[in-house]
Amino acid sequence: MSIQWFPGHMAKAKREAKEKMKLIDVVIELLDARIPLSSRNPVIDEITQGKPRMIILNKVDLADPNVTQEWKKYFEKQGHVVIEVDSQKGKGIKGIPPAVNTQASAMIERMIRKGMNPRAVRALILGIPNVGKSTLINRLANKKIARIGDRPGVTKSQQWIKVGKEMELLDTPGILWPKFNDEAVGFRLALTGAIKEEIFDFQESAVFFLNYVKVAYPEKLKERYNLTEIPDDIGELFDAIGKKRGCLVSGGHVDYDRTAEIVFRDFRTGKFGRLTLEQP
Ligand code: G4P
Image (cartoon, rainbow, N blue to C red):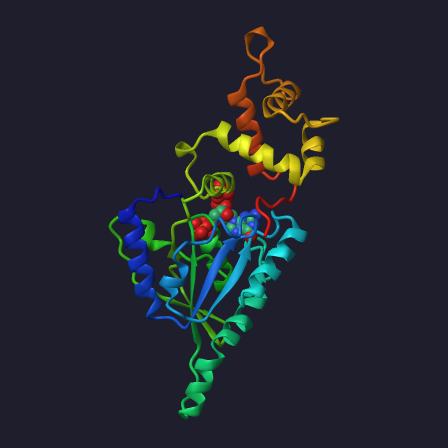
C-alpha cells in the first residue's frame, strides 16, 4: 500500500497510533534495512510516549549484509535492541518474542511483585507503508490473516494475535508516514517502494541512484551493465547504460526516460544484488 501523506493524514495516523499505544506494552519499530534512517518516522518518540520499544530491520535479504551490521551497531549505541529479519522467508522471526519479553521485563516484575500472574506481553508493530508490516504480522501469526478491514463498508475491531505463550500482537499495525524534509530521503523512499510511482520522477530517482551506486557499489554497477569503467559525468553514464540496453531513439540518441526506468526496475527487482541505500 502506498499513501500520499497530507497534514490531515499525518494527524489522523498520529492520533490512531497514540490510541493503540494505550493498549500495548512494547512497540516494535519496523524499518527497511536498505534505508534504516529514511524509513524512520520523524515523530516516533512523541508517538511512543516512552513505551519500551525495539527496532526490527526488515528486508535484510535485500540489503548489504556488512552495512546492516553497521546499522545494527549504530542503533545499539543509541540504546536500542535491534533484530534483523527477512519477513518474506521468515528468517530471524524466532528472535522477536524473547526480545519483546525482555523489553517488558520491568512490567512483568511489577506484576509479580504485586502477587499477580504475569499476562502475555502486548506488542504493536509501527512502520511506514510497504516496510513489511503485514508480512511480519502474518509470519508471527504463523498463518494468513484475513484482511477483513480492507473491504469497503466492513469495519474491523482490533484483535490480538497470540504469538507463543508470552506475547500477543495487535493484528492491525500502526501506519506512519515517512520523513519528507530531505530530497535524498524522498528518492530512497521512491526507490524502495514506500512512495507511489505516479508521484515521482523516474529520471531524478535514477540519477540519485546511479550517483550513489557508482561510489558505494561501483563493481555491481559495472557488472550489471557490462561497463569496463564508469564515466564521471552522469549524462555519459546514462548514455553508456542506454546504449548497452538498446534504449535508442531516432538519430541514435539515448532515450533517457527509458534508460531511467530500466535502472529503476533493475534495482526494484534486485538485479544489482544486495545493496543498502544509506550508510550510518
Ligand atoms: P506493509 O504492510 O508495511 O505496507 O508492507 P507489506 O507487508 O504489504 O509488504 C510490502 C512488500 O514488501 C510486499 O511485497 C512484501 O512481500 C515485501 N516484503 C516484506 N517483507 C520482506 C522481506 O523481509 N524481504 C523481502 N524481500 N520482501 C519483503 P509485494 O506484495 O510483492 O509488494 P511489492 O513488492 O509489489 O511492493
